[in-house]
Length: 68
Image (cartoon, rainbow, N blue to C red; front, side, top):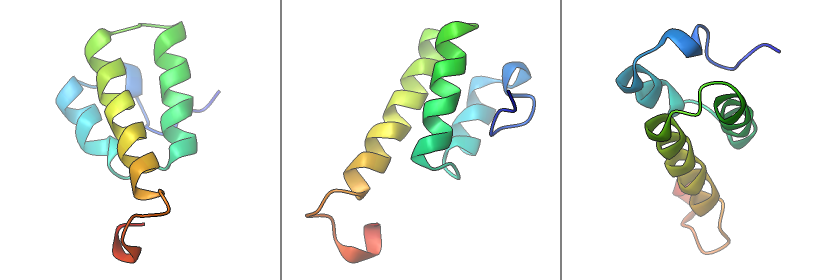
């Protein structure tokens, strides 16, 4: 399986955090599944969960048009 972030498993958390901002929900979900099944780093899972929540919130019907 090709991950949406190259060398994901070798990156520091700060590097992962920066790169997550460019990913869509599908990519975040793929990384989260990989993280849970491979390394299960609590801090990485937290970053992925936070990004997923931001994506879902920006897609909410009451979100301003510019935030989608």
